[in-house]
Image 1 (cartoon, rainbow, N blue to C red):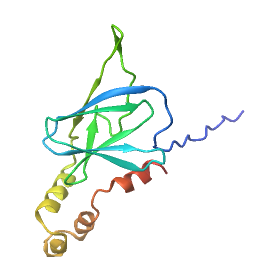
Image 2: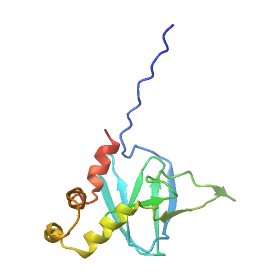
Image 3: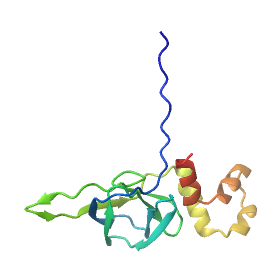
Length: 157
Protein backbone atom coordinates (compact mmCIF):
# COMPACT_ATOMS: atom_id res chain seq x y z
CA UNK A 1 0.00 0.00 0.00
CA UNK A 2 1.42 3.37 -1.01
CA UNK A 3 2.04 5.86 1.76
CA UNK A 4 -0.26 8.84 1.68
CA UNK A 5 1.45 12.13 1.02
CA UNK A 6 0.47 15.03 3.19
CA UNK A 7 -0.17 18.25 1.35
CA UNK A 8 1.95 21.10 2.67
CA UNK A 9 0.03 23.58 4.79
CA UNK A 10 0.40 27.09 3.44
CA UNK A 11 -0.11 29.66 6.16
CA UNK A 12 -0.32 33.30 5.28
CA UNK A 13 1.56 35.45 7.75
CA UNK A 14 -1.06 37.96 8.91
CA UNK A 15 -3.20 38.86 11.89
CA UNK A 16 -6.33 36.84 12.52
CA UNK A 17 -9.40 37.97 14.44
CA UNK A 18 -9.05 37.26 18.14
CA UNK A 19 -10.89 38.28 21.28
CA UNK A 20 -8.00 37.31 23.54
CA UNK A 21 -6.19 40.48 24.60
CA UNK A 22 -2.61 40.24 25.81
CA UNK A 23 -0.27 42.86 27.21
CA UNK A 24 3.40 42.85 26.24
CA UNK A 25 6.40 45.03 26.88
CA UNK A 26 8.92 44.95 24.04
CA UNK A 27 12.41 45.45 25.51
CA UNK A 28 15.20 46.46 23.11
CA UNK A 29 18.42 44.79 24.29
CA UNK A 30 20.35 45.73 21.14
CA UNK A 31 22.59 48.74 20.54
CA UNK A 32 20.40 49.71 17.58
CA UNK A 33 17.11 51.50 17.04
CA UNK A 34 14.51 48.74 16.64
CA UNK A 35 11.38 49.36 14.57
CA UNK A 36 8.28 47.46 15.69
CA UNK A 37 6.10 46.13 12.86
CA UNK A 38 2.64 44.63 13.39
CA UNK A 39 1.34 42.51 10.51
CA UNK A 40 -2.24 43.56 9.80
CA UNK A 41 -5.17 41.44 8.62
CA UNK A 42 -3.89 41.47 5.01
CA UNK A 43 -0.31 40.70 6.08
CA UNK A 44 0.89 44.26 5.45
CA UNK A 45 3.43 45.65 7.92
CA UNK A 46 2.27 48.58 10.08
CA UNK A 47 4.96 50.49 11.96
CA UNK A 48 4.45 51.09 15.66
CA UNK A 49 7.52 53.26 15.95
CA UNK A 50 11.08 52.87 17.07
CA UNK A 51 12.44 51.56 20.34
CA UNK A 52 15.86 52.90 21.34
CA UNK A 53 18.57 50.76 22.93
CA UNK A 54 17.52 49.64 26.44
CA UNK A 55 14.10 51.25 25.96
CA UNK A 56 10.67 49.64 26.27
CA UNK A 57 7.42 49.79 24.35
CA UNK A 58 4.26 48.70 26.16
CA UNK A 59 1.62 47.32 23.85
CA UNK A 60 -1.86 45.85 24.10
CA UNK A 61 -2.25 43.29 21.32
CA UNK A 62 -4.00 40.00 20.58
CA UNK A 63 -2.87 36.36 20.56
CA UNK A 64 -3.12 35.98 16.80
CA UNK A 65 -1.27 39.18 15.88
CA UNK A 66 2.32 38.62 14.63
CA UNK A 67 5.08 41.16 15.26
CA UNK A 68 8.43 41.61 13.50
CA UNK A 69 11.37 43.87 14.39
CA UNK A 70 13.99 45.44 12.15
CA UNK A 71 16.99 47.70 12.60
CA UNK A 72 15.65 51.18 11.84
CA UNK A 73 18.78 52.29 9.95
CA UNK A 74 19.68 49.18 7.95
CA UNK A 75 16.46 47.16 7.78
CA UNK A 76 18.38 44.15 9.13
CA UNK A 77 16.44 41.45 10.96
CA UNK A 78 16.28 41.52 14.73
CA UNK A 79 15.15 38.63 16.88
CA UNK A 80 12.26 38.77 19.31
CA UNK A 81 12.38 36.15 22.06
CA UNK A 82 15.03 34.43 19.89
CA UNK A 83 12.68 34.11 16.88
CA UNK A 84 12.18 36.14 13.70
CA UNK A 85 8.43 36.47 14.27
CA UNK A 86 6.70 36.99 17.61
CA UNK A 87 3.20 35.69 18.32
CA UNK A 88 1.88 36.98 21.67
CA UNK A 89 1.21 34.54 24.48
CA UNK A 90 -1.69 34.56 26.93
CA UNK A 91 -1.19 36.69 30.02
CA UNK A 92 -0.78 34.86 33.29
CA UNK A 93 -3.33 35.55 35.98
CA UNK A 94 -1.61 36.24 39.27
CA UNK A 95 -4.07 36.94 42.06
CA UNK A 96 -6.65 37.99 39.48
CA UNK A 97 -4.38 40.56 37.83
CA UNK A 98 -3.16 40.44 34.26
CA UNK A 99 0.61 40.40 33.95
CA UNK A 100 2.47 41.96 31.04
CA UNK A 101 5.04 39.76 29.31
CA UNK A 102 8.52 41.15 28.71
CA UNK A 103 9.45 40.35 25.12
CA UNK A 104 13.18 40.70 24.46
CA UNK A 105 14.54 42.11 21.18
CA UNK A 106 18.10 40.99 20.38
CA UNK A 107 20.55 41.08 17.51
CA UNK A 108 21.07 37.74 15.74
CA UNK A 109 24.51 36.42 14.83
CA UNK A 110 24.83 37.70 11.28
CA UNK A 111 27.04 35.97 8.72
CA UNK A 112 30.34 37.76 8.13
CA UNK A 113 29.35 38.70 4.59
CA UNK A 114 26.09 40.26 5.82
CA UNK A 115 27.99 42.29 8.44
CA UNK A 116 30.36 43.56 5.76
CA UNK A 117 27.49 44.45 3.42
CA UNK A 118 25.73 46.38 6.21
CA UNK A 119 28.90 48.31 6.99
CA UNK A 120 29.63 49.13 3.34
CA UNK A 121 26.02 50.31 2.84
CA UNK A 122 26.46 52.56 5.86
CA UNK A 123 29.81 54.04 4.77
CA UNK A 124 29.61 54.15 0.96
CA UNK A 125 26.99 55.91 -1.15
CA UNK A 126 25.11 53.60 -3.50
CA UNK A 127 26.34 55.51 -6.56
CA UNK A 128 29.93 54.75 -5.49
CA UNK A 129 29.56 50.94 -5.23
CA UNK A 130 30.99 50.62 -8.77
CA UNK A 131 34.22 52.27 -7.62
CA UNK A 132 34.88 49.56 -5.04
CA UNK A 133 37.45 46.94 -5.99
CA UNK A 134 35.31 43.97 -5.06
CA UNK A 135 33.88 41.03 -7.03
CA UNK A 136 30.83 41.77 -9.17
CA UNK A 137 28.77 39.29 -7.14
CA UNK A 138 29.35 41.41 -4.02
CA UNK A 139 28.37 44.58 -5.90
CA UNK A 140 25.14 42.84 -6.83
CA UNK A 141 24.57 41.80 -3.19
CA UNK A 142 25.18 45.41 -2.12
CA UNK A 143 22.49 46.65 -4.46
CA UNK A 144 19.92 44.36 -2.83
CA UNK A 145 19.14 46.13 0.44
CA UNK A 146 17.05 44.34 3.08
CA UNK A 147 13.33 44.76 2.39
CA UNK A 148 10.63 43.78 4.85
CA UNK A 149 8.04 43.64 2.07
CA UNK A 150 10.16 41.18 0.03
CA UNK A 151 10.74 39.00 3.09
CA UNK A 152 7.02 38.90 3.84
CA UNK A 153 6.28 37.85 0.27
CA UNK A 154 8.77 34.97 0.74
CA UNK A 155 7.03 33.89 3.97
CA UNK A 156 3.66 33.96 2.24
CA UNK A 157 4.65 31.89 -0.84
